Length: 290
Image (tube, rainbow, N blue to C red; front, side, top):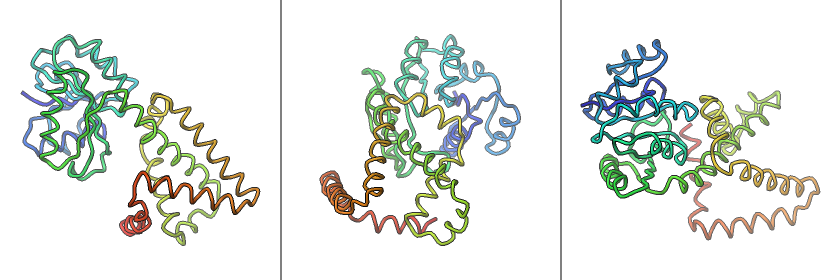
């Protein structure tokens, strides 16, 4: 039996297919774009098809790697052809909605929400994080098996509910991406950005790298996250309020209050992470690697 990656011709699907092939598995990948599939076949040497049902029928494990907006239609398409021994995994960046959809449609087979917390630029899974979101005993048993498999290969694995995952991702992904997109929009308002990049220090280089890293990727992916993550509008409103508070201190030249608030943040960060002071050195090490 094979591992089927539905949507495997995309960047993350190809990455996963390459990983599984190197780990000794037979893989079939599907996609709607034949030219992308042929390119994936040449690159990976994997079996390819545009037929999701045909791939699902011959698979022991089905991994769904499609945009969230297409997710339910894909699950509805393959669900009549699953069988009790199959494992069906989704690797979308949102978990509550796809897990609910899999439970709604798939009546034969075990489903599990999985989120690889990295992108297709990763060299491997060592030191990379995965989140698994089982919702019952059967899924938890499967999650523990997958956890052992991943941890044996050096990955870090966390288990939580789909709702807990999405609540955290609204900050981890949603807010981080929002800040990067707004930073890019702001930086591109200046006509000497190329010169700034040439002379910029470590903090500026990290900011520009963050902005460039997000903007260089698939806009549909980031749009989907912003539209679907729970409470993202409220979180971004909080960020906007904080930005205004700090901007007003600068506008009013209230240096004492600005410094006092920074010291308050230092105290609060120390409570969260007593080693946070080492971040300045870590920043320089990151920049040196750019």
